[in-house]
Length: 308
Image (cartoon, rainbow, N blue to C red):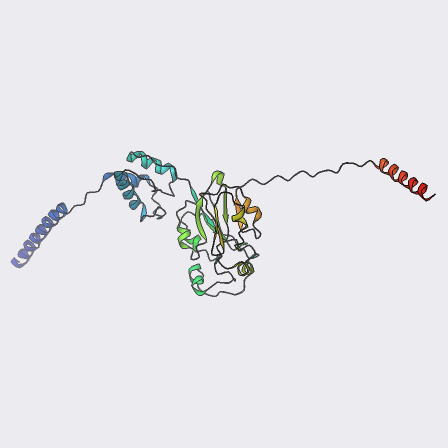
């Protein structure tokens, strides 16, 4: 019985000493967290998508508070919350927030089943990453969409779906938060975040094929062939051609759509532009038949007089 009593006393003493030691250590090495971090985190949407470039909303909140202490939070943006959330954060931290133009994910490939014929059959793991690692996939284009839907599975907001008819992903710009998850999931980098533009209007090259023109055109009917017509017609220096591929800088583009009109392969697309009204047909002026008949008769009489 004494042994049990002694054991209880010893264990109790060890527990008491350990708790004291832990208390002292916790106080000595305690890291105090700025209460504003928790307040900012409550404002953020809590999606933890990583679209801001930080590991979750807690990392974003910490960066915002540190930025406020440094004097500026420009360059920090929550793509899910948008301008309204960032405005609330700026008010909380007593900072001025620069207006950030919203962006949206765009799919830079239009190699549909019609435009890009299949030349092989892939019978492996049904993911874009796996198919890409094996080679060009089922078509002759080694740059275009593989159609397995890795981007769809990566999206947390149900903003991107595969079109069964075209075999390509389509983005719902009303649901897209520009988190960038689909961009990271695509092994061929065909998805890009671009500015939505005024009234949602955008112009961009719907191709990423860097092969030479003849090779690219053989693999896909609507591939960019690097002909340079779009670059020549652009008056704003918004188009550059590198590695046989045209690219439009959305910061310079003025949406004149001249490049769309001159592209010989329809590789440049314009989105949300109004449909041009058809020009009214020009009606032919009625001819004076009687006058024409009289002229012919007069000419015939003159020929007869000359013969006589």
